[in-house]
Length: 133
Image: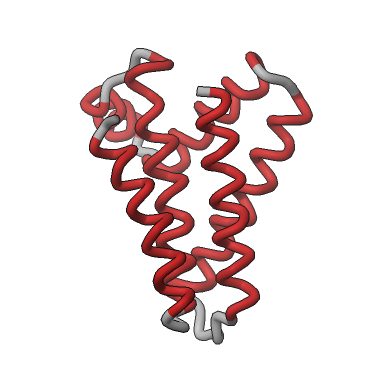
């Protein structure tokens, strides 16, 4: 298991612990990053793109790493798995990213409901990624 995949698992576990401790905002952050790290960990083995190559691509294209990885994996899901799975993945990951943005940057209360929903979506995304890649 790659160190990044291990960190992905740690973040999912951390989200659960934070929810139990009523620390809802940071739990959403951990849920999102568990998926982001899982996605990134897939690239060397399944797409033949090293972490160094990702850094170079992102730097030369002046795009965010999050956008690049999400776009690339979404296209692979569409091409190799199918349109329905692509739509589900895009909707779920987009929703989770929106939850994380609100949780991290907006002056809002993050509730138990929101943090549990983020955790559930993260588990679904990570399960899907594990099955497919």
